[in-house]
Image (cartoon, rainbow, N blue to C red; front, side, top):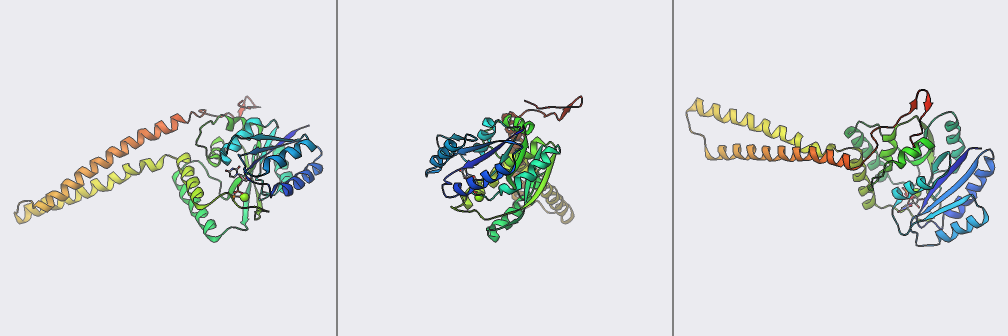
Length: 314
Ligand code: UDP
Ligand code: MG
């Protein structure tokens, strides 16, 4: 019997958990042909979340949990979940039922068909403000322009991962984690499933705009080092201006037989030295980018098949 681990990061979710619990039990009754492990990661909740989880575990040993020493954030909670998961595949869902457990049978169906990473893509975003939708859309466009890795749009963390993907993700041990970029980075056979994202059942979102901006910057810096190349690109127009302006000044001097004027000399000097400075920043940026990539200590590659056999990369 194949085992499915459902990983649920939970931070102050006492209000949503009872709803989730019912849904999960319903799901497990529905999918009797699988063994289940419901793995909560209690991310330093300050309410009764952990008491509820312990209660569930007493009633049903399929419920497991990791209790963090403090709040480490969802990204860290997710990798902890992968570390502890024992299933043949793992599914991330949010505790607030925004990721409907009802979609899980479909995710599993595609997994059985041989897909390694079945991710749920939002068709609609109920309960989110226009501003959030708009900024999210713009963000994806900008991000995709900056990186060669394909980014999955409107995709959260709601997805099913085969054991191979779990093993791969466990190898990415960087502490500033952006899981979304990692899902893209590992590759493997991906499949998209569409769903309507509901508003959360109870409680409040743990995000605010400050946190989202933080996440956005994280996303950019973890997908790509291209912002560091900005300086190199700025140096080019600066030198172009220097070149054009010096031709203009020299030509003028020759044609109307005057000496170079003080302000012209100053402009030329400013262009020259700022150009050199920007260029030097660019060079430093290039090296910094390489150091940044190196320090992540990622595996160099992940193998899909070896002589026709599925490689688990463990
Ligand atoms: N979460 C967490 N640690 C945090 C913040 C959130 O484990 O520091 C969990 C939270 O309990 C929920 C999931 O991450 O299960 C998504 O959070 P939320 O619903 O607040 O985010 P949103 O759906 O609004 O993006
Ligand atoms: Mg939510």
